[in-house]
Amino acid sequence: MSIEVERKFRVREDTEERLRAMGAACRGTSSFRDCYFDTEDHRLTAADHWLRTRDGRWQLKTPAGGSGRVGPPGTTRYRETESEADIVALLLPLLLPERLPLRERGWQEEEEEGEGSGRVEELVGAVPLQVFASILTERKVYEVAAGGLRVDLDRASFGYQVGEIEVMVGGEDEIPAALSRIQELASKLGLEDAERQPGKMHMYLQRYCPFLFQKLLDAHVL
Image 1: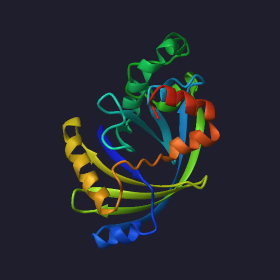
Image 2 (image 1 turned 45 degrees about the vertical axis):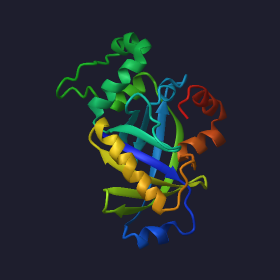
Image 3 (image 1 turned 30 degrees about the vertical axis):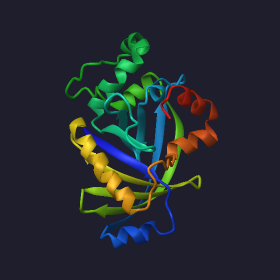
Image 4 (image 1 turned 90 degrees about the horizontal axis):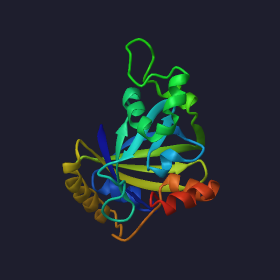
């Protein structure tokens, strides 16, 4: 499982001009829809676990190193998991109260080849989990060869725009170097160290799910 180290920032009028001036290559634009799932009592998000489908494909983001937040404001580190069997294995400990009824309904924790066990969709239906957020995003991507950095310029369907500087690393020991590379690029883009730009999910919850937003603030997830 790779770790995504990322810093969010406010997109300015000269952001793309600065990126091109430093030799960043535009890799085009795309759009995708993220649907996020949780229990009725928000057991997953309260534990900083973010289960979603991106255009129908399951993904799970979990904090690396015990906390998703690291370094300057707006900087995060999350493990990204796309294997359905691995996702199920990570989710089950958070769903311990449901293990007995899951077994009674035929759910098997041990993956059996050819039996379809380990499928996230089956777990979602058995618990059950519900969609609490659906966000359509238009994204323009720039790649910065030096440092292996990527810059995403996102515009969400509810009118919010945010930029992300990110780098993928293979282990927690690589995070400090990744943070240094992100900070160097942030300086070239004219970002202040104290600048904090909320992410799309932060703003979505604040606008449309105020109860959950406050619950996650109190839990120091947001």
